[in-house]
Structure formats: structure tokens, C-alpha cells
Length: 235
Image (cartoon, rainbow, N blue to C red; front, side, top):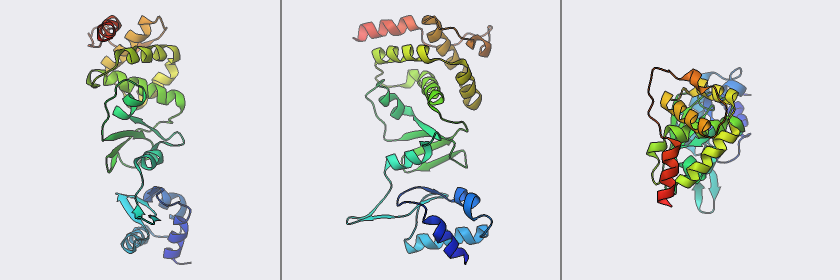
């Protein structure tokens, strides 16, 4: 069987508009059967013939043809390719909006994912950042917590009542081992850790976050009493 046939057969496992990561496919399926040069040359020819579509560097999909023509992958399909099966999660305003912290939206979508060869990849309005970690539910919740606290002052039109509700959830679900796993992978700012400590201490949740902070430093972070006061005035 020649290299072109081998590559075409390998591509048949994908559905239309399902993202194909070229390097991953080569490593897992074709590396022992086809030279790398021949592989990428064939992908290039398939794109020129319209049998394959290149959506970003190293990323392709089989075209989805409808009566209206070729329909490209939706934002949801692209995001899912990098986040499903514990491979990633969305952050930024997509996250803040889903948590009810703001009604503001952004046309740009930010994603953290382990399904990435380089450090970042942009596909249309979606930017994916590589962070190697298993994105199970506790890990995703901790990332969401730290992302919100890390960017608290930048969230436009923040709903203070929703944020207070979110802080209660943080305190109820806090897990020291999960925090350590996420911190080791992402190394958030010390002021963000101090903010988390402030929340946990406010709700009398035991924690060892002092071990991540310096007793000689003064960190700038919002105080829970001020947040409650802002919520009272706003509402």
C-alpha cells in the first residue's frame, strides 16, 4: 500500500469538521509507515484538491459540505477539540460569564489545554495556551477559582453578589492537594494566593497557603469586608 493510500485511510477515522492534529496523527498512526516529508506533502496536496482543509498551522479538518456549501467548524467544535476528555478548559470572559460574574462578553475565547504541541495556537478568534495537567472536575474548579481571583480587578461590570456566592463555593470545595497540583502547573501570582487565603480565612476554612507566601511581604488583594460592602451599596 503506497503512502498516499495509507494517509487517506488514516484520515477516514475522522468525521467532517473534527479537528485533525497532524503531528499527533503522524506519531500515533503513520510514523512507522510513511516518511514525515511524504506525509506533510500529501496533506498539502489534499488541501489543494479540497479534500482536506487547513484551519491553522498543523491543524486540519475534513470539509463538511451542505447544500449551502462548505461549512467550517463552529467555535464550540474547535473549543471541544481542545477541552473534551479532561484535556482543557475555557478561561477569560467565557468563564466569567458562565459563572454569572458579569454579563460582559468577549469576541475572543481563551482556552487552556494539554492537547497542544507548541506553547500557543490561534484558530480564528480562539487562542489556546498549553498547560500540561489532567483537567478533571476538581482541577478545573481550582483553575476557575484562581483565574477569577487573578483577574478580579479586570472583570468589567462584576456582579458582587454573584462573586460572594462564588467565594462561598470556593471555601466549601477547597482542597489543598488540588491547589498544589494546579499551582505547580501554572504558578499563579503571590497576590492571587493571598486573595485565596483571605477568602478561606474569612469563611474559617483551614488552609496552609501561608506556606506559599512570604511573611516579609505585603500583598495587594481585595478584602472580603470591602467586597461585601460593595455588594451592599451596588444592590
